[in-house]
Image 1: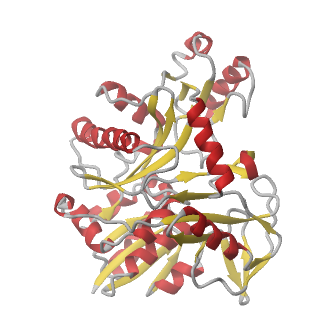
Image 2: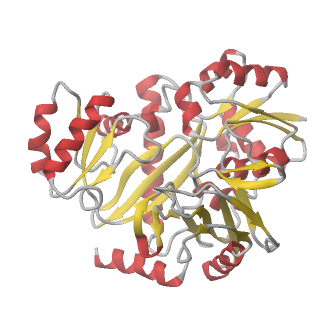
Image 3: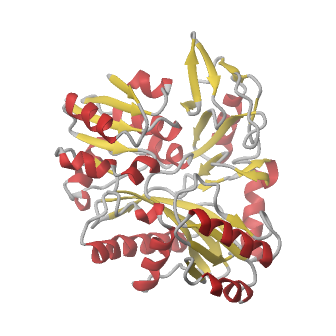
Length: 434
C-alpha cells in the first residue's frame, strides 16, 4: 500500500483526493482545517487543525507511516510544512517555504524574471518604506496601474485602476496603506487582454503543462460584480482555448520552464510541485500576471479528472526527479466547472442549510466551504460546491454542469454564463480587437 498525506480542505483538495484514490493501492490520510465530507469519505483517517500547527501535522504523518505528502493550499506552504515534513524524512509534492515565495512574495517572482532576463514581465517597481517617495513618479509614468501587496492576501489584496480605484492619487494612498502592514508593495502597469491559467507539474528539472484553463473571477454574469476566488472555469478538448493559439501556450510554458531553472540558479534548490502561472494574452503577446505554488481552485477540477496517467506514479516521479521519463496524458475532452455560492457572496454571504438532490450521473461534485451538522449540510460563507461537466466539446460539458446546478437546493446562486457560447465569443472578440 502507498500511504499518502493530503493537506487541505477545499474543492481543489477533493479533486486531488479523487485523483490519488484512482490508484487502488493508495491509503489516504487527510489533515484539514475543517471537515470536507468528500475528502473524509475518500480517506482512511482524518485530522482537523490549523495549518500553522506544524507539530500536529508532522505527528499525524509519523503516526500513520506516510510515504509522501501532497500540499493543496498556499497557507501550509507559507507556514513551512514541507520543511517540517522533510525533517522527519517525508517528501512532499509542494515547494519548501523558501521556494514557495514564488507565490507568497509577488516581488520574488517579478525580480526573478527581471534578473534572469525571462520574458513576460510588465513594467513594474517594488517599493518599500525606504524608497516610497519614488512611487508617485512611477505611477505618473504609466497609463494605468495595478497595486499588489507583497505577501499572501487570500486573493483580496490586489487592486486595479478602473475597478477598485479611479485615480493615481487613490493608488498612491493605497500604496501607503499597504506599507503599514506589508514589507513591500508592487506597482505594475495594467494589462489589457484575456487571462488564462497554465498549471504545470515539475520536479525542478522537467516541467510538464496540463491543459490551459480560463477562470472567471467576477461574482455575476457578464463579468459584473466583485472579484471572488473564482466562480467557475472551462477547458477545451483541443487543450487550447478559443482565443489561444498553440504558440501562446508554448510561450507560457517556456516562461515557466525558465522560471524553474532560474529558481535553482537563485537558491541552489530544485522546485518540486505545482507551478501555476496566471498569464494574460495582450496585443504585445503573453505576459505573466502571477505565479501560484499549488493547483488553482477551480482550475484543478478542470485538469485532474482528465488525467489518464496514474497520478500517484507522477507524484512519485516528481519526488525522485524522474518526471522526464513519464509521458503525462490528458483526455481530449472539454470541461466546465460552475461554483454554487451563498446568496450575498462575496461581501455578505448567508450561512444556511443546503440540500443535494439527484446529481446527474454524468456530472461530478466537489465539496468546498460546507460543514455537516446533525446529518445536514450547511454553507460556511465562501464558495460552497463545485459542479463539473465533462464532454466531447464545450457545449456538451456546459450543459452537464448547468443541469447539475439544479440539484443544489437552498439560498444560493451561480454564474449561468460560464462556458456558454455567448461568453466565449465575447472573449474571442476581445482578443481580435486587441
